Amino acid sequence: MNIAIGYSPCPNDTFIFDALVNGDIPTNGLRFSPVLEDVQTLNEWALAGKLPFTKISYGVLPLIASQYQMLPAGGALGMGVGPLLVTTPAWLAANGNTTPKTVIIPGANTTAHLLFSWAYPQVTQKRFAVFHDIEDAILRGEADAGVIIHENRFTYQQKGLVALCDLGNLWEQQLQVPIPLGGIAVRKDVPLAVALQVNALIQQSIAYSWRNYPNISNYVQCYAQAMEPTVMQQHIELYVNDFSHHVGAKGKAAVHTLIQVYQQLHPQSSYNNPVFIEEPA
Image (cartoon, rainbow, N blue to C red; front, side, top):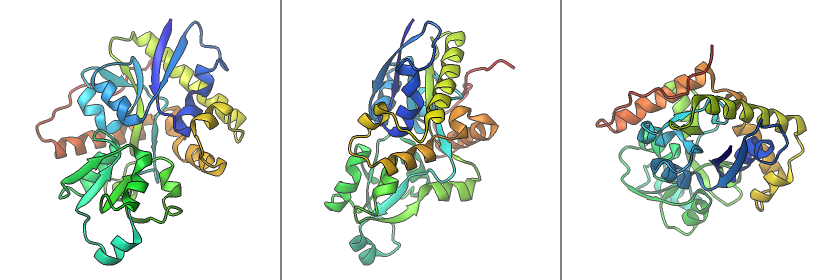
């Protein structure tokens, strides 16, 4: 059986899926065709039901719940992993702690957008861009501020930007749960036995990569483009953690909290579907 699986080219995702898609672990007859895209593109594809297995932002989950459930493995959750709202020192000096009027966000359906909307509901002048374009757009003066994710949280100071708000810390302090950034969704037409098999293989793939760490494979490096090795390591160590192996009760509670926040922001929405696939006892 050949299975298409979507994930981003970011080091945490390529680290997780490296062994799975490159033949480093036995897959018991399953073959995988990886499709690497920016997470917002994957979110949009999930809205259309395009891939049977795909990384998504948890922010889009309420919109795809009729088509997808989540795997317990392969996700990005944790403490201290959240998006940052950043600006230029000049804007900060001129405006202090006032709320920015115009903000660039890495995708309409991302968890970053959900967290920003929760923290700054009064901001309505938003535009969306691919995450790696946001720092330069702020520096060009295209918006007052921007929300950054992924490795940009390690590089924004080098670019000459300053943080206005750590949206992740705000979430953690006020809601007392980890931040559920993204996870692996499985389309509901996939048999449960296959979903469970893929989930177990993802766990084995993660374990294989950790056994070889701190060596970073050519596969991870080639998609990381010009990222420095130290930034790759920081990225992996921050976003690939125990929650990536299995979301656990604490992680599931965080996802349910995020869904509740989504419903507060979108009162017309409803969510009555089991979030995660059923695991054997």
